[in-house]
Length: 115
Image (tube, rainbow, N blue to C red):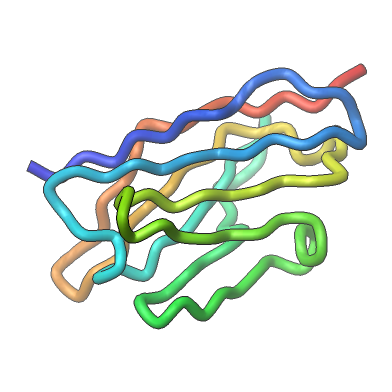
């Protein structure tokens, strides 16, 4: 059974940092295109970062230069390092593993950026 578990969310002040983790079981994340998506209040879910099996990364333009996606194959975990956080980054953050056969999602972790 495939399971993705996000962690690391919380309340942070503007300008602060958080590191989100996406730990997987039942699947090897290096086989996937792993994405981090977010859904803010009243907004549609949007993809903010991806990392493919070769380690290449992409970022949505509003987070480029502030967020970094990375993968630890030994821990079968993907991270999203978020720096210089802004109130508009407030959202539920989800990781997903995309395969030709389908997509697996985690349950999400809440990030709130507020003073």
